[in-house]
Length: 70
Image (cartoon, rainbow, N blue to C red):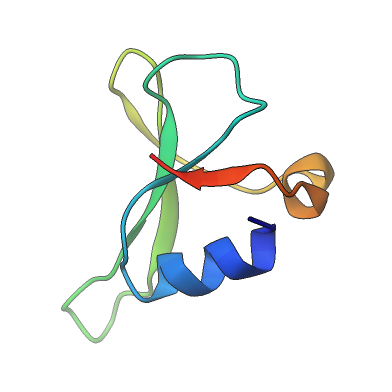
């Protein structure tokens, strides 16, 4: 699917997503929807080693249509 469709699903907190073009096994993005009103939602990346880091989409990520549910 394309980035727009994936982002809509992600915002609904409907699963984790990855790209077929990513070469690391077990890596994906997800969204954190805080319950505290003073915090904002954010997208994070799970690395192949399992670490959680902030994620910002690259131009390639934004224009790709190889997004799938992880």
